[in-house]
Amino acid sequence: MRFSYRAATRVVANCEEVRHQLAQEGVSAKKIEVIYNGVDTSHVCHPRPANRSAIAASFGLPTDPARRFISIVANLRLPVKDHATFLRAARTISEVATLATFVIAGEGELMSSMRLLAKELGITKQTFFLGGCERVAELLSITEIGVLSSLYEGFPNAVLEYMAAGCPVVATDVGGIREAVVEGETGYLVEARDHEAMARQILRLLDAPQRPRAMGILGQQIVSQAKSLVWSTGRSGHCWLI
Image (cartoon, rainbow, N blue to C red; front, side, top):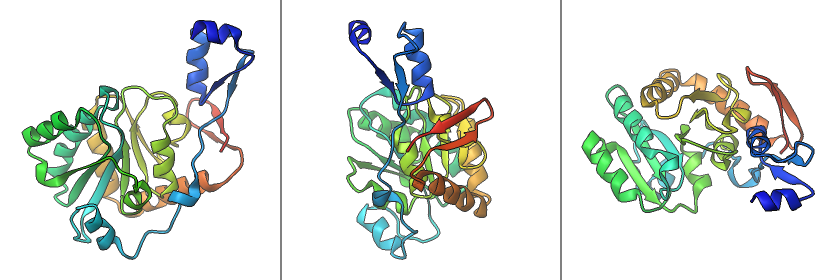
């Protein structure tokens, strides 16, 4: 990689955080260009469906309209996605919000161990493992909150897809996630591995139904605008090119 960086005319980073990491690795700042990931909003940016129960049934999920679906879309191949933190947060949430339902979309070698952890935590009845999912847009159309519990990230497409689908985001504050999520406006950020903080923020959204709807609408508006967007993140201003 170092040889490639030296030979390259330009090195593309998909967020400012990655630009910073590349510079720390010795890549000349003059070579680095930031081009953010985008998302095809035609696939995920839709109104909430009238046939929610039918969609839920097609995934093998409960069809009770009172159920609150909290989803994580992330592969189960590597520990970096840290599904364990999501599941531990789910246990805390389920003690308070009995209708909260936790959906894991993704496949990989860690599925068996995560199923076992869900059993140990006593949340198997509330937790659904979908495996590989090619209908993410449909899943997100019935999802109330999108979660990402990663230990490390660049600029994850999952967060963009959550926002495009009108879902507020609760995610770990790693990589370039804060360059997408507007803290307190389109979602909440928590420290990695802090399942209690993650549970608190998810419950905060579940306890105030109008709040997640407003956050989801704003996130959807941000992603659907095909132009440069600038906002204050609390640390510095960032420009997100979609």
